[in-house]
Length: 278
Image (cartoon, rainbow, N blue to C red; front, side, top):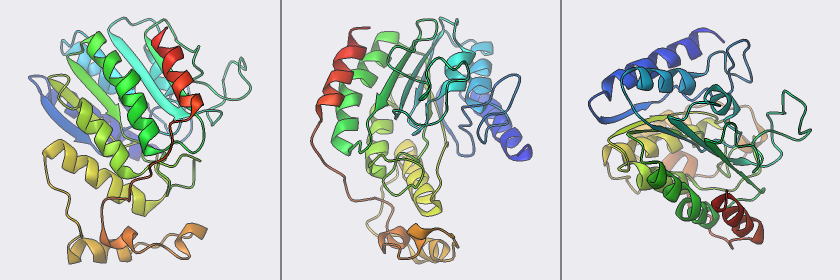
């Protein structure tokens, strides 16, 4: 509980140093976004994104945009920069899911539409069942316009994969290709980009999801079928969970999930309209 997030925080510091003159870094083990200065929260003994963004500011970044794609609200990062005009935080997360509000203002969860911190935060609490087309609508309607408006010289994207349909910790229904597409859309919007891992509780979707993030960042082509060594590695994973009792073959043989298309529901359209007006 200490050494892993400490290593992640060190990786974030190194990432900030590496992109000082521009570039892209994937700190795979990072993304612990719940930690607080005075206490651990969730699995987050330290808050790697907050520490990394702090280093970016120390290295001279004027404006940093933080995008959180984890199924859980990036509450620790939002609160860390509550009154910092140089940092804009945007979190896309499942409505009503943990973390609970530490101040007991909202008995359901943090990250409501009206939770704007010091004004430099926006939140997109999405309903269960979020599909690929709805994430695309959120990206086109909110994420991309906010980034372009803020004009950052660095972007930090937290790529938690617990929002995927194969993950047991949320009720969202995204494919990993939906996350890859969002990362691809933002990767050239600032001269510096740091990506991190984050939540993820299905080892098969974690490995495949983050391998695809790496492919997007490094401009690698995703193969239709994994090579034998990669397939063998995945088949050797032991996961004691009901989802692993009859796993789909694609968990072992491919990186890309089938797309999860669906209607753009009224809740999503209303969310876009509301947040756009803030």
